[in-house]
Length: 280
Length: 205
Image (tube, rainbow over all chains, first blue to last red; front, side):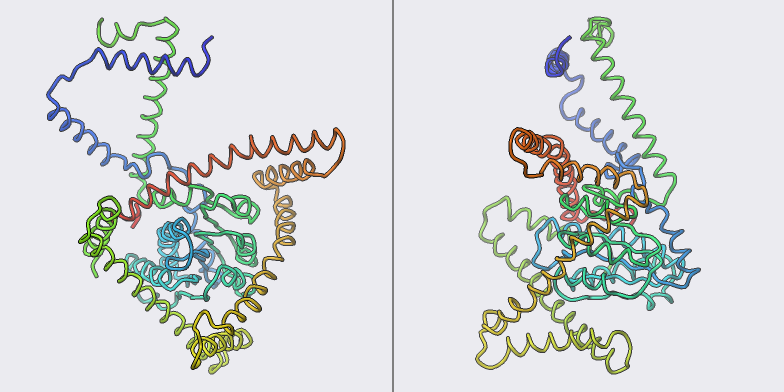
């Protein structure tokens, strides 16, 4: 029984032997053209950004229902963009999380616009506030609800991570749905505790590895680790696109399974793939 | 600005900054410097406008007797104190002792007080998570309890065994999960940053 390393080595050796015994059917130019066409087709069928992700980890597909409940109860929804912002004295990873939160904000804003629910967006950074305002405006424009635009507002809470956490803890508003998206660090649990208090539902998303436990303890649905970056690709409203991505995933999984089984059978000497594939 | 123009602008700036990172060229360096300085100026202008809007909003709250009057007064007094300390004649700006005192004696202790609530908040969150029977939270709290037991400072062979087990749990299972999380975050952050630099929008935009 070979060890996993030996098995991997034999697989690599087997593939190397096949490649070593092969030659291009066409010249390099036509080969690259063919490969390019295949890649373009793959891009059209299933964009790589969502090839591996078709789940709904944080229940973002159910945002519409949460907004319908908010509309019925006459309350609003609140979105916090975390403590990093864009131009604050934070690191690049924190800023990137704020950028990654904007597509999710757009998704929430569209659902809120359709349901006529006012949206409050909390941020501690002016540029993030401007970008959030543009995202909310675009959501109203895309849903043809410009008359409701004035009901939503962007709240600049002031400078600092403790500031936004403190506001979340002390606010007396009870939104129907709360979303904490972006960089959450040492203040994460305070921030989430404040957001959760009185809210009908809570969705959290942060790529801070050290705060993964805070997101789990904070309650509600959570996007943890790399998931906030994937969520933007997972917010497709088109059923056809999601179905095509899922179908492509199945095909890729099937191809990988066949490759692995074939390699194991060849290594075990049960079948001679070289003879089967190349007739040698 | 229309979306295609904005996307083209982002693409041009992104490619310029990438090229400046990869190629050593004085003209390119100067051009990238102009772009970066322009971004800093815009950000500074937006920051000033946002702070001004915050002040106006709070004054409006007091004037119209809406919202939280105590909070509005505190915000305005805080803004006024920092402005007076930093802008009064003869002040050294952000390095002025008065400004530094406001930060060191007021802001930092207030923030520390807030973080002091974390202990209670964490215990409350753990209790609430167990009450809701969340599977992930139950595993998390159980692992935390086991780790806490392993970290009990005991002497003798039992203490040595506990310390060894604590070290092993930190290096192997916890370390493996944490590294996996970090690798995943790093990969997708790189992809997302590349997409941002190249002006590629999110899928549902």
